Length: 391
Image (cartoon, rainbow, N blue to C red; front, side, top):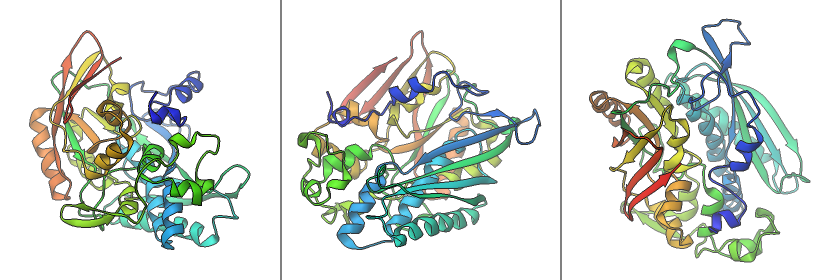
């Protein structure tokens, strides 16, 4: 059993999917987000979407960094994580504007003071203001902040995003077909709208990243940051402290900063692509929970997906693997490993899409293709050789 599983977490969320299997699946079976009839407007040519997500256990990393350094500004990144994980899912179905957002913050008041709550709330609004400058309008409708120390050890930062969208502007993945190529968009680097280098980690796999990279010092100093019934053998088993530095592209970054790089949103990019090249987009996948295997959940037919031109693995993932000893197959199933968004399109359109991304400072390239097959399978060409997943 992997360390990831021993900690009681699953990249595939099998128990969650089993729990919701009786719920209404929505109008489009293969779309990245569930969509429903226009209950709000009563127009059969529109859909309603209400999507919930959050920063997950990344907030615990922010807690550790804040306790170690006193830097409260790190909580603004957690605010961005909660928003980006929502809007980037919605981008996958074609929604990019005029969105409503409500935040949900649960905290242990004895450990999380008002200045942290203020940083999260103000950070959320600042992120919305920044996106507005790129033509992406998100309306902040407040939310709920609850003091629930009996339930939450430190803090949980989540949100719900709601949209109403025309059916003729939706991406449902129904048209993914043999012959499509897959354009991947780098998760790391520094886009034109980012203030500093982004490690590319995003907000998935942070339970693994935290325990595999950071040392036992954090278990001893901050027992409130982990499930105390876990074996000591899987809790904070790494070699590093948050303030340790590593070199990336000739510069030094603290490990804490790399782990806490705010989740990159692709909203400025997708707004341009959806407005100017909508007809060229066959499908869109957010490589979040499930990493490079995520796409397999949304295929409309039995295809073989081949990804044989993946990005070089960013340093943060190399660091995690060196500490954890996880094999490549698990790493690619848990983490994005280099690109966190992919578009299915034609080979001709791919070149144009890549140019649009480059104009925003985002590296993009054709990472793979869709092949006809009588069975559902995924083949990755990685630094460790060819990895296959069958479904």
